[in-house]
Image (cartoon, rainbow, N blue to C red; front, side, top):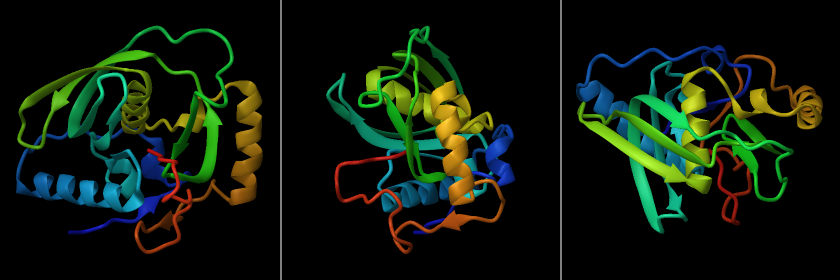
Length: 198
């Protein structure tokens, strides 16, 4: 079991599109296993490879799907995501807030598609697909964005974007080289309570 440090906003790998995976081999399967271990140690619900400094199109997830009333755990490699139209208006700070393991301690409201279809491969190269709604659809969009070099704070509406810029400056989330190690460093989100981040 290898738990990797999670890199923080400002690390270049987070801000560029990830490369497609071409080899479905033991090295890939080890990386995916490490990502699951890192995700579990972080108390998060999703983790993309760029968040551990690896610029490949891979993300893992482990979370409750409240709409389907099941727990889902899996991996998407080279995913393609199609979402429903994002509704107009301002996001609800109580119902539509997100956090991110690569933007420690912060969360902001963001509108997302209510329903998504996502297709890709698993670690063995087998084709997989999901159609999900609600909060779980939000997780899929959040992780898929990581593979495009986009973090959720890059999508904020003006009011929240201004707040993010202030917090970004205050926290120093604009330089490379910052990371935290799940299970070793203090949990930046105070997990053990009810919050989960991706």
